[in-house]
Length: 143
Image (tube, rainbow, N blue to C red; front, side):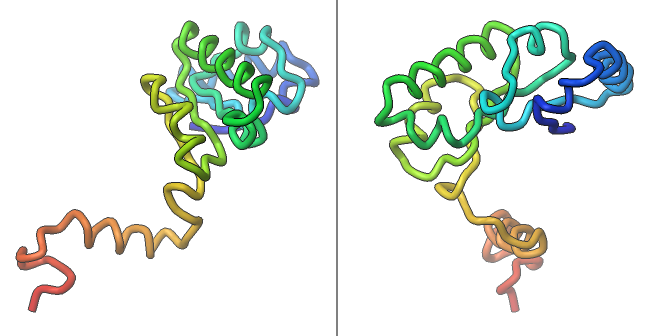
C-alpha cells in the first residue's frame, strides 16, 4: 500500500492517473492520506485507482463534540462504503472517538488509544511475548 496526499494529484492529473493505473496492474494499492484536508475532490475518488481513504485526525478529534465534523466523518464513511474503499481513522485517542468507527464494518483505526510509536524491534518482541504460550519451550521466559 502506497500512501499519498491529495496534493500529489494537483499537477498533470491525467499523467498521474496513468502511472497509478500501471502500478495498480502490478499489484500496488493506493491510499489517500489525510483525506479531507487538502484539495478533496470527489473526482479524484472517481478517477484514481485507490483502495483506501485515511480520514485526517482533525476530523476524528472533534467529531464526538462537533456536529459538523461528525457529519463530515459520516459522509466520508458513506462514500467509502459505497465505493468499496477501506477506511482508516487517523488520530484515535479516546474511547469516545473509537465508538464513531466501531459501528462501521471494516473501518480501521490508528492512534494513541492503541499504542504509541515505538521501534519495530520492541513491537515485535512484545507481540511475540503475547503470542507464544507461556509454557512453550520457545517462550521468552521459559527456562
